[in-house]
Length: 237
Length: 237
Image (cartoon, rainbow over all chains, first blue to last red; front, side, top):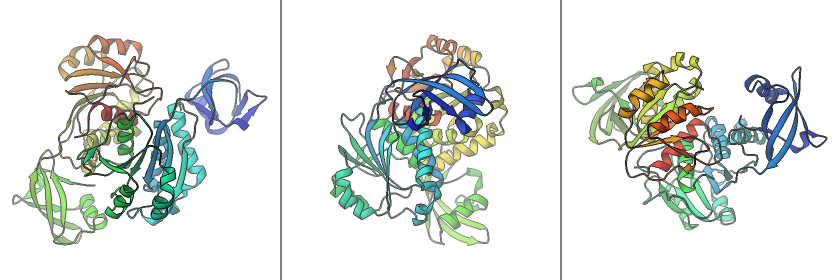
């Protein structure tokens, strides 16, 4: 946790923050903070800054916050990802937030097992917690937009034209073009499931103007591919 | 597992492979292979190709292998990494193998807890298993070279000049230069621990000709940073 995040409604008298639970334990046990120390803090979807430790009593920690900096900018990147296996989901959400991806759509595709959609890890609170973990790591405050779509065809045909920002890219092994480097405008990147998208699914996306790109011969795990693609498409900000 | 790996000494009569245990279960339960099916196989540190399923009996699977392709090329990249927390080590080793990094040195630095060096996950068999998992994912056969060095100063002063291949780069937040893109020759990349390298350690590396580079404002987890840096430094092959 490189940034301690809190919600606007947790503030008392404009700048006081009373923590208990996970964050208080982190302040006491990992940071070993003492009264007078300053910690990096950020208001969810707001600014970042420092907080002075005012009091440590019992399980509770009281901080006085002073926020005066904007969070780091987001990459102008929307990722559309076939829903991964539940055990990989939390890490992927963290990575998306960590890298500064602006928006994530989790969609169904032929090789996504239907049972994945039943996972409790897809509950909004679970997803939000994973996204916040990524923000805490990267010292960001702005929660990436997350959308879930359980039907491939209506999503691609009816919603995708409005969802897409900038250049449409489809990461697909065997495509003719290598992944481009350092785009100068926004992009929307589709990443298939572990077994890949079907030919039918690729054609539907190509009809919407998405160009196939590849990352070489190696078959990467979804999380590795997502980080590698994002890092090539945009210079980090 | 996108490639089933075996050791040269497991082959009988030049091309027969009898599997039990994890790999046999994978063939039966995940791939649901039947006699006559063909699977992707590779000989550790050797070629890749296909194997025909000859027999499934009880727990055992017999394959007839035909290897005629080289594995994918490695990136001309040596990574020198401060030993990560044991719980992150296995994933990092997998990622290094998956990305095609040629060589990895795990070294001590000031902010690496000494206890990490006692972890059973550092045993040669545990490290090798993690590296093989990365190779199985990426359809590679060549095990990255792995070296462990428990003392920072003698490593940097006495060994590093001979270890270093090509351009020396030091990933350090706050450096003046952004990470370069698509190098045209080999490189050796130093990545510090979670808390970063100390000023003293950075100076010792700079004295050896390592240039500081950064990945923007965000503080990334070591595994994410490693993938992002590798992906920017070299176009995937």
